[in-house]
Length: 318
Ligand code: SAM
Ligand code: SF4
Image (cartoon, rainbow, N blue to C red):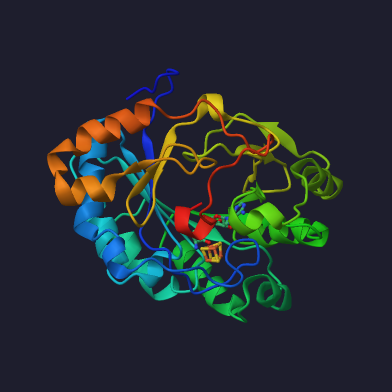
């Protein structure tokens, strides 16, 4: 469906849990107050929302978290989501820790892609950023995904002081070879207090290593990343610079939190309480969803400091 500004909304990110097995310093370094189990939607409830969303023309879904793979039954949920009539694409975003043994199953059920978050290929830096000395698990997850033939991308957050890591991550991705996308820190939750490296500076660093790195007009997913190519690189380099470059005019997405809040825009706390609808009057679901999507805000307010979202990224799903 289109919203009141004429944007076609066709993509829903579903956060299936607020729990996580890492403590990334820009996300939830000290953990969060977790939702009670009865506050979190059941898989049946997520599927009810997804079916209603398909009825409105939302055909592509991202399963995220917290860390989605810590919730038991995640792969089976993805299988059922993919099997809903009208669903065209289901992808997963994960920190990769639990991925290796699940990659063959994800390939079997036909997951359409897996994005793996990795901010550094260095074990000590990984432990410093995430709080856990577990880089090996992530590397095994990446290798297993590639070996299983799953379309795999890497996501790397541009933290302050990560100058040395930008080209290291690009080289790491190239060795697979995979696309790597660099994400500007967003002022959500802990991100509000985390200084970041500017995307323009990251690009300069990359261009000092690969001088022919140039923008390409390729669409390689559902997101707002714009991509760069070099003759020396097989994979592409993506930039997701939502803060310095507003791409709200082309926004195609809404988000569903694990507790059933439909969020039309990342930056605002307002949303539709679909859990209440699901548990009291489920036949109203399509109408409530339609209204919330229609009223999606015109643009985020990251530059202006009027962010009303109080939840952290792990509660929203990124
Ligand atoms: N746990 C999974 C993971 O890390 O991929 C899925 C959820 S995580 C919230 C989704 C994405 O959001 C990750 O790529 C993570 O790096 C990114 N993220 C978290 N906090 C962020 C922030 N403040 N600014 C930008 N990206 C952020
Ligand atoms: Fe967990 Fe992902 Fe947040 Fe890191 S970014 S703490 S892996 S939810």
